[in-house]
Length: 266
Image (cartoon, rainbow, N blue to C red; front, side, top):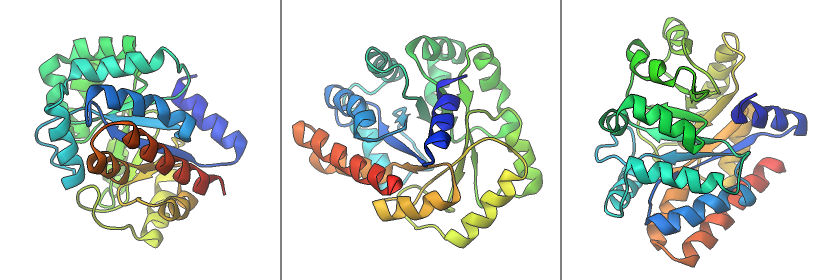
């Protein structure tokens, strides 16, 4: 059983929904990011998404775009992203880590090299937002045999025939994008999400996590009614961007994550 499968099984046994937190690797700097990363599980994060810095994050809003720029100006690279994962794994063998981002950094690093080093570092899954299912072989083939899950995105525009295509090769969990548009902007329509997730569950047994538009503990609690886990990214990254390093950044992110986790446990 993979770390992702095990964590979802634990959540099911505990009768609660999971919290997925997103931060950008090397934001605002390598040392602060490493401290934040290691603090997330004890603050209440069940899964961690670690962004791979890229200069053109087209699916992201200004908050994460700015985080990517800060990271790239602070030694942000695939090498240091994997270094962060290795450092995290020295003291945490159970919290799943998912790398999230765009295909370009992986392609430039070398897909085979990336797959091998990601496995060795302790990566559990990857989410690539700009590779359509029809072209996923370039990712799936190198990942074969690594036990790294390819986590697929499902959007409000993914109708029945498209959903079947998306599910091919999907593993770990499905990431339901609750809004159309970029990250960190609009709020989701709960009625539409409930309908969409119900249809998704008819076609797969994979857990469903919902992200985009979830900012506050109240947002997380309400959205958790429709899924197995909620993803919070832009609001956490915004906290990091406003403070830009030091102990206060770590403290405030930890407090924010604790509040989100408490809302899901209520």
